Length: 227
Image 1 (cartoon, helix red, strand yellow):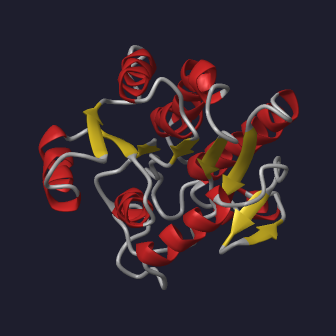
Image 2: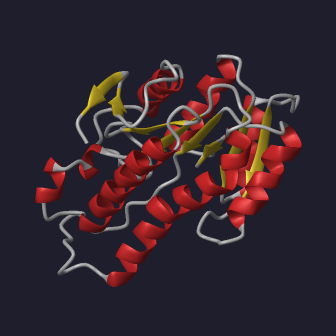
Image 3: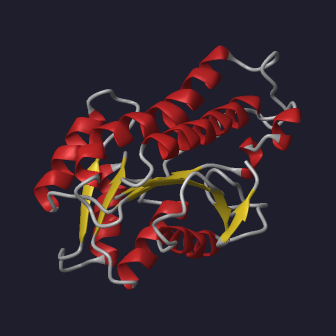
């Protein structure tokens, strides 16, 4: 199950996972865009199921869990990809807005947390189940020293913390890892980013095919990096 599946890293990851033989449930906010993705990637409607949902809404995780339960009755991979970066390029906490911090936390931390909790009963019934939280190099410890895009950095640092806590709690039941997709050309990354979302999708494939024992770590391009 992939959130943010209608564009950018989520779209390319959905495309690649389907090509690799996976069945996918894709989630995004825009129903028209999501329907277009489904028609393009799976015109016969056999292996891609789509659910339009706004992950900032408190009832979204339960609705998504029902869709997953109806589709499979279990879940192997939860790929928490949907995210926002709404800071101005130079905004710190002191010169940014509280609203930006609240929304960053709502989408980048609370949504993955609530979705993980809602889907946990289905994950434990899956085959070597795993949660992948799409984080960012902008949210590692060293990057917190930078005063720019502070709301985004703090939300991704918190997501890394969630990854570590859940990996300890769920060890042996569900593998939980963080993933840095790199700075790539998406709506979030912008047109000047050096990478492509297809490259991020390859990194996503690498992390979901790791040995099940690999948990509580941060990965980029198939290699472990520092939190």
